[in-house]
Length: 139
Image (cartoon, rainbow, N blue to C red; front, side, top):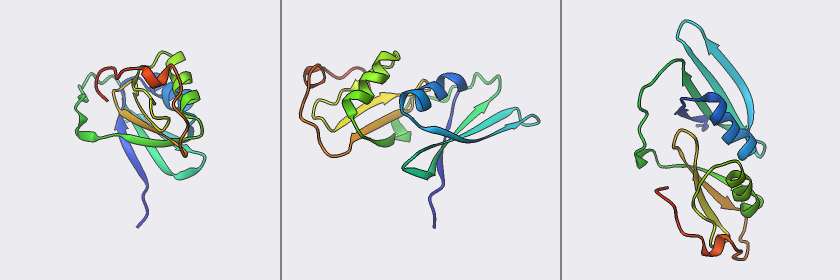
């Protein structure tokens, strides 16, 4: 058996690509527009794990509520420098819901409220402003 991908539905494809590609550093591996079905599929992958993908499904002109419940869980990514990653995402306007106070773990949400866990490769010593930053909202 081989793991292929996780699919998430998105409302604003450009905003979601900005988050995952510009913010997290994933790259688009392929894209398919289906005119008859009125949807676009975009597959993303991290350089270190190119075969484990995220499938973004954008249903054109949909106002369906995809929900914000935590029953999905989260996507997790190992990062080289959790402080730099959180700083980059924060500077792009994203809220760090669970700051990396311990130098190891943080949570942020995509534009479509998908919870993203960031895990530091190894551990970094606690660092301000993260060490004393409180949680914000749910993650």
